[in-house]
Amino acid sequence: MKKWMATGLSAALLTVALDAQAFDRHVTVSGIAGTTGVGADVAWRFHERLGVSAQYAGGLDWDGDYETDDLFYDGDVSLSAGALKLDFHPFAGRFFLSAGAMLPDMTAGVRGRANGNETIEVGGETFNSDDLGEILGDLTVADGVRPYAGLGWRSSHRSGLGFYSEFGVMATNVDVSLSSSKNFEAQSEDFDRALRREEQDLKDDAETLSVYPVALIGISYTF
Image (cartoon, rainbow, N blue to C red; front, top):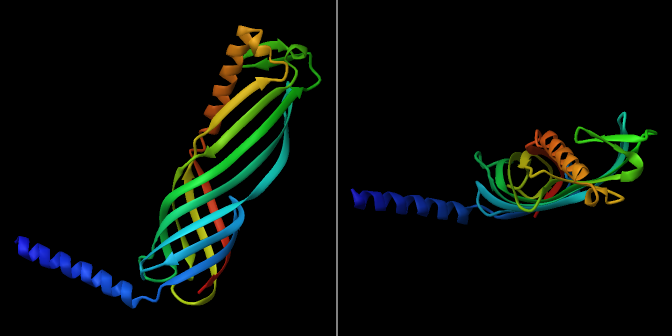
């Protein structure tokens, strides 16, 4: 039995090796744009069904504002992400399944000031707006190394110009940090506790988005 198993395993490895030798390896370079920004993707397809890819996209920044009964918020969002992935082409063509790691830097900064009121409600409690100044906040959607899974379409099996697209999800790790511009939390334990509750409420709301959608399209050239 062991002899037959060894023979079968050797035959399978030999088949893979022969396929790899028969396949004309290609490098594909793509210009991409999507939900992580604008950038480039480089893929090396070393087997008819396997390849590796690396990409980076960034520069997706915008400003916005939001108004409540107590506060007027304005903020800025910055998104970028790199990725290292293994690509599996189940049909030996353009379609691929992808898994790997993303290295995102997705953050937002927020400033909130009293909306014409003398008091502000923070964490379910009311405070004098003059004591606090502005409410400053930093929101992290994802950073560090995050797992990724997706699928896509890349013309990496033959030389020439082609189309690139990819759709997937990346796990997030939300974090929220709040403070007051007058550092009132250092002067009032009640406000400090209320601010921490406000942080947790915002984090709980943001964590409903447990994954970040990755959608990219572009033009590629395979060498």
